[in-house]
Length: 631
Image (cartoon, rainbow, N blue to C red):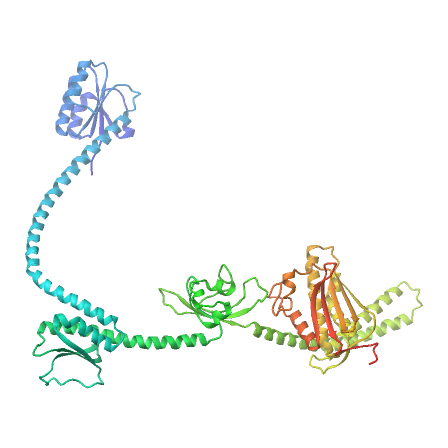
């Protein structure tokens, strides 16, 4: 490390201790400099101390030629200044003033001093390294000479080896281009014919007979073909006439035999792998569900015929390299709920009305360095549809049981209350203050009794009951009563218009009630959604029933927001819903349509002239009997 300090020789009170610079009076300067070796030395020169300071500075110059000097002169003549510059060669010569930035000038000299010291050390280091380099150069030249002698000695040997190496390359090329044993024999014989005078080559497997080593009329060299401990047979190299194989040729032919062994093993494995590949591809394509192999970035590596059929593409290569979510669902990002490497379920995330649901069986077939995912998509939409229909039927059956229990439990108390209310009314004259209250109580009890009667009627008519003659007016009224349990409390009005008391139909009462209840519930939910936007909105559901020459038509319309045209064509699709699929199964209108179809009917959707959504249910004449007909 380079040491550095500084001092100023001056009799004036200049304090530079804050900058690490000592201020020494002229009379103490000599004693100070004997014990200190400063790097930068400044001096305040006046006519009276000029000679003494010049002497001290020359002594310091002789001690260290790199030492830097600062001369701060005061009242010196030009001759004295020229002498100082010629004799001492200071870094700076400045007129003295207590206002001078002494520390800055000292800092400049410090920088110059450090640079010179570093250059000096660098020069010493360069000289030292040059000496080492000269020694290394001499040693290297000696070794080069020794190496050249060694190379010259082996050059002839290498020339021969190079020639045989080219033969070996040619032989190996023939071996690895062959796809059968006969091709290997022909290729090796062709490659060795010129250099080794080989007339022919023959490979014999362990099950084949060998040539007799005692037959003196045949000149050949035989060596084993094996990989590790696995015996693959022998290879025979033949020569014409009395030519024999020397020791070097035999060593070379053993190398050829090793390559032939690997090639035979490769040929056998390749044939087996091709057969396995064919079997795997047939198995892969035999699975009807869409299957694909993808990398960690969702890029498709392989697909089966089921995947091709699902996407409608014509060739396998159409999807290789494409994203699985784009190929299957036309998305720009991975499917929501995708958990590769696990078993999970997703709903078709594309903006289509189909709303298919898939069980996805995913497994990572790769290793830690590379992920390869096997993914099989099984469309479980129909299964879920059936499952939900079963659950819906079970719920309705359970509802019937619960309704029956509730109706029976409430019937007796309600009957008692009605009797007591009517007895009280009979004892009154009609002019009492509370007479109107008694009438309201009686009215409320009768309403409760009618609700219980409706529940009991709903419970008694089983969904699996036999087909009987039923009145569509009663069916719709029953559906209205069930719906009004919720709609009346939120201000939704249901108006039912019919020109005659009976519209007869052969069918199941509760199934049709359930169908119309689902249709009314769809209108009810639409009105509730609109009411959330406008608290002053008055919901209205209108039901009309009429006969014509084709049969009976029931029109249900509401004054909700309706539905977009692209939605209307799909509202009967299984599991299709514009609401939250977790709380809305999307099966209400699907079940309604199914029930109506079972009764030889249809349901159509339209928008009337007032922009209201209309669901038109029609039962055809073969199943409908008007109450006014001759039947």
